[in-house]
Image (tube, rainbow, N blue to C red):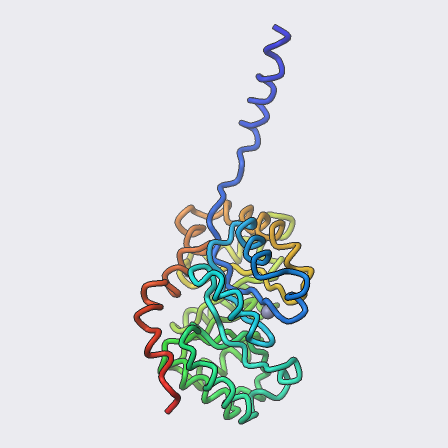
Length: 284
Ligand SMILES: [Zn+2]
């Protein structure tokens, strides 16, 4: 009898706390910038992604060489976005800097990129000449623009540049679920990623307002880590464990869409091959 006790107890414990379903993850917000390179080799960075359950990831970096380095090691895992910052000094002024425009147009000729960003912008810069040019390039070459902006600015961008597809970083960082839902309703070329949005599931419990928006627009959301400082690479595994917890509280088809199917669909490898030539045309 005694010998049976331990296995029985273990079985009871397992039944009480079933392991959360581990969905593959498409991570829409990863950086591999200069300070990261010395700490994590490209191989190590790829191993961290894999250990966190990340099947594919949108990567951008300052400077862009980090993205290219990762992409060359794992072209089927890395979805390269071209960050328009040659150095961090470009962050404030890029929207009206012709040098940034030239840099991006030259760099795009590599033909590997699926988007431009992540970039930062306030509403006052949204009509800047470099932003306008990026929107033309995005529409012309099927590129996404990944914008770290507030809700006023994303609305302005979507209104000014209706032909470009936007990936809204951090869902505006602090915009309410209802605001995000309202913008998704009005703008069909808007997609949203949820990097660093702890308010989606405070204490691990999915917020009802976010849940309602996810269920209404399951095809428009993606998750993301944002390795904006090197220490975020170490946190990636725990971060995605928490993401899996709230995804598990959604209907399975909605959870799968947000976890990875939306990213797979929008940045499919086959479509990428076909479009590569078009994307690498010299700028007109
Ligand atoms: Zn970022």
